Image (cartoon, rainbow, N blue to C red):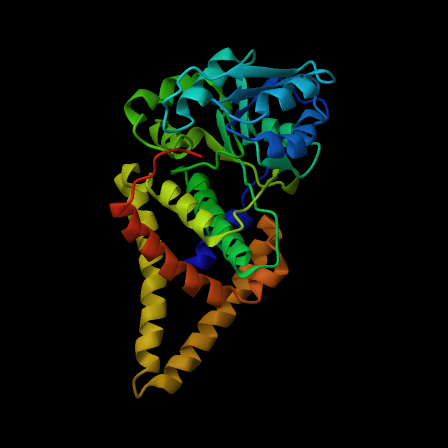
Amino acid sequence: MQFKYLKRISNYKKTPFKPHQDKRPVSIIICAKNEEVNLSSNLEFILNQHYPTFEVIVVNDYSTDSTSEVIKTFQNNYPNLRLIHAIAENSKSKRSALKLGILKSKYNRILLTDADCKPTSKFWITEMNTCLTKKFNCVLGYSPYEYKSTFLNKMIQWETLQTGILYSYRAIEGKAYMSVGRNVMYQKSIFLESENFEKERGLTSGDDDLLIQNIKDKSKISLCLNPESFVLSQPKTTWKSWWKQKQRHYSTSPFYDKSSQLFLGGYHFSQFLFWSTFLILCLSKEWMPALFIFGIAIVAKSLITVQFEKVFKVPKSVLWIWPILEASLLILQMGIGISGIFQKQKSWQ
């Protein structure tokens, strides 16, 4: 299974950049709720992109900090920066703020990111725009997390890699099921045709995933895996905040189509089967053959993972302990899934 993913992703044809390619204007949308610190640190990286014409819209979703003041300070030097105030105060998710930002945008090409994100290069807009062609009206980008030398961060890095592999593979197959809201681009018309925010008002997450689910022609969804298109995000630094974030993210999966649910369910079940079988055999009389088979499987997957590292730029220190990370993440994911049944999220922030 991993080899099949690697083959498809490695052979994926990148859209070549042409110096005289049409660079149509782009509207960048950022929804912000109490993000004065992140905006102060990251907004400059977005505003200083090398691209002819673009605007940056920050939708202030009823912040109680100095978010507005930070934006107004930046506006003194950047006339293409716009501040819009959200109008749906009781919204549980950022859907209302996002829709408002898109409706108020000047341009037809929409590029999304978050306040805690910054592009890894000054050609982020250029690379994403290159993949938005007559054939493709939506582009899925990749957004890794900033590396920190903690076990939690290594597990976040590993999960981000696994998620990137899965949604990249499905997009290449013409069966996209999700996007990363921190880095996705589409035509405004696709958003207006596909969004179903009014019926999703009760959800705290999924404004990115469910939009992809609602796009009828998945063959028009492209992928951008050029490292210069990556957007670096700030990871959670405590187990409590990470757990809460994952509960919010996983709450969207029941609304995926059956094909995507079967695909993801099969992937995670295969992981569970592998590790549980290994554990059972180790506790039996057949522990020596189990160790031998397990060793071969670990070596094979390690070789494949190294190849994925070249595409997704995962820190090498993560790869050294991937079996521990995978087993730990599997256990935690089951716990998050169970706890999510009894504990509902109240807000997107």
